[in-house]
Image (cartoon, rainbow, N blue to C red; front, side):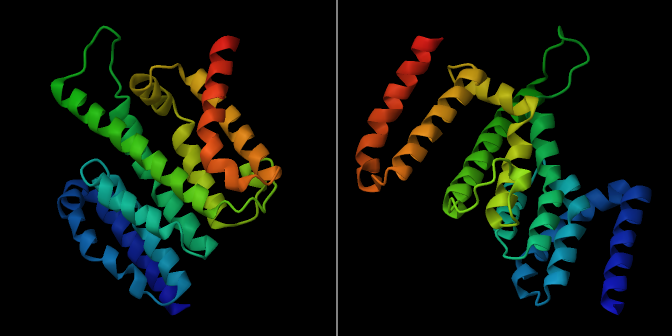
Length: 235
């Protein structure tokens, strides 16, 4: 109990520093990188949760310039077996989402106003980071998706690493910035991309259900090509 109170007090101290001395906080926020490697040394799960939750303002201050380091930490911790720890880091990582969307799709006061060269550079970098982040999450989802949870919607899934990853993925891929990033980097409209992914998933599920796993690697490419042709004909 005493340690929990101490943790809350320290978190409030961090928030007070941010609110009253924001620039001082920002200029010293990099010190957090000395402590991220100590996460595995924390013994109690409750303390791990508090650690992940307490990083929120550091993510806010550092996400633009140190996105990759914070992303790697997020993807590591969200695979923790305890759901409270996963939820804490997922909420903290929302600042990564804010960083990506603000840079990939920067706000301009007028449609006629062009982005500055600095904004264009950050936009290119952010779009690459965005797609890479989503791809890494999708790879982890494939790793942890055992098909045992038959829930139709993510919020109906039982607590699991897969559910936490699905929630993280959903937050990233539902945004306008992500749609614009896909449209800028893919020669097909976003709606067609989604339809193609849907058909590819249906085909993959069909192959699993009919127990032709041994044929999957050889035949999947042919089936997916056929699916893309079907979409083009429908459109």
